[in-house]
Image 1 (tube, rainbow, N blue to C red):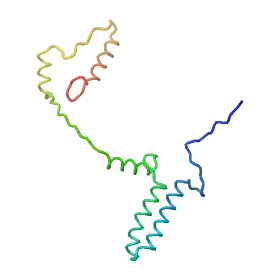
Image 2: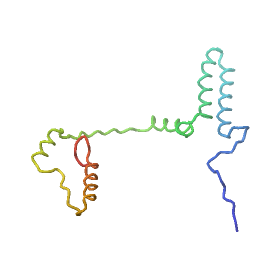
Image 3: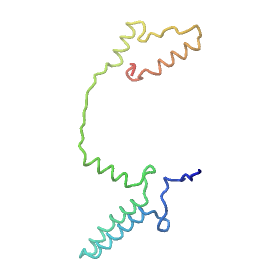
Length: 143
């Protein structure tokens, strides 16, 4: 038996013209809210000032994407961020200044003992480069 596997499952279907169902509902909600504000707010200048942000928000919900993600995901993440509890911890780690590290390194032959892996100079060179790359350039210590 052969079954057809659906293709393009991440692409939403266009329902109303070139709009998906979500886009249509966002725009319809924005238009409906704008009409309600225009009809029920007694001062037309105030109603227009309230309608403009509503229209911009509904257009952003329908069409604007941030990092190829819908704008509603950003709005949802921001609500969760502002409404959730936040716990900030800071632990200060004392680091030795580089001059002390250099002084210690001069007192000791070598801070890093590189073992002799083989007689091949190429392997020894790659070994020493790997060791030196793993050192933190600021503190000259291993991570």
